[in-house]
Amino acid sequence: MQKTPTGGKPVEALDHNERALRLYRRAGHRGGQAMALNNAGWLHAMLGQYQRTLDYCTQAVALNREIDDRHAEAGAWDSLGYAHHHLDPARDLSDDPSQC
Image (cartoon, helix red, strand yellow):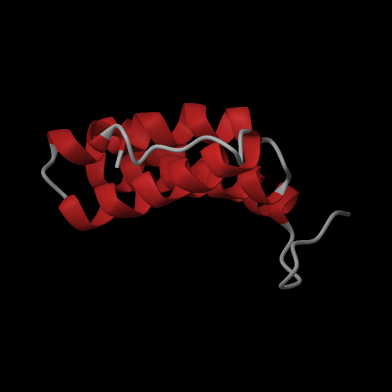
């Protein structure tokens, strides 16, 4: 089983997180959904699956904006930045403040 640098098990964690996401959706708990989406994105990043990170974390950003949770939104943006950096480390976003 693949482990993260800190010894975690992202594949196993993804299974648990997907279950949590389903339960949050069923309960209509939007904050929980956003958290689970960002967690899924981060776990995919730990597996080197950066495009999947972008998919999940983009959804997390949008949902956090809808519920006006700026702290959690910032965390999702951080995850997006991490993925973008690994997909294209030469990309410079400093010329486009809307991406910061």
